[in-house]
Length: 346
Image 1: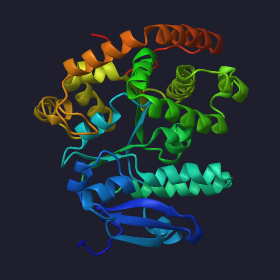
Image 2: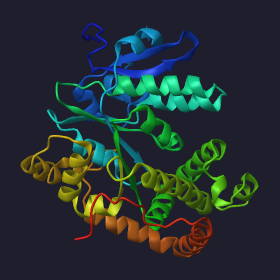
Image 3: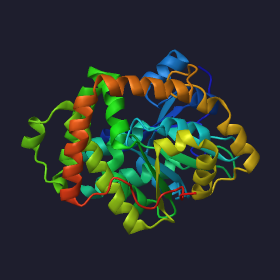
């Protein structure tokens, strides 16, 4: 597979993995067009797109830290099932910004911490990952990074390491989130348990008054709601500490219900050069008329119909869990609407 020679300043060489044993970073050559064709920047995504792994090269971390400075960047944290892939694609406008969807190198930072790496080593790895991911594809372009949900407990660290960064927390309202879980079936019910396991280890569930033993006795949708509440509490507190200049919040309904206004406001928050004509074109384009993962045609009307069908089929379970979650939120002092909204009420 042909590729350009490795150049640490060339953003088409994606910082893909941490090579802990060698204290190095593994780069993979991923041209811009390949980013646009893949939902996530994973090995599976690469092999599906290229037919094999793209060319790779390992570079010592110390060398990269010495040669790569910090740059402003945008971070798009999210609750899952909220349109984060959609918004990342919408903002990836050549000349204005590049969107990086769930780069695995950030997941490797979480893995380091879960295996007991010292906090200083974790911070060093996260700092290097952010510096490398912030490299622009063309001069004057911004970069918007959408980390996976695994990174949410590390949001404060990432914002501290990148002091010129700005962030959004995009979330689906709890009921919508639960409908997504039941729509996606058993694999998703298992996934929310796996995610909450990580959140328990990271310590962001304990402030809810919920213990690991409690989780063992919870239903699948209670587990999903517990994870949602833990994320919501974390980002509500972080938004209050950082203020609206650095962290704003947005709902999935706002994104899909008013895409042009949302894209324009998100671009302004991130400092991206998107004019009104570009915003209108993007809002009317394929990002909002096709499924963000599969690429198949998918209209807002189809989405509403599918959600209504799933809601009706699981109404009792969803209602019970929503009522339970509201009680937990009330006891923990959590409001269901996050602070610093990106879009002000009309």
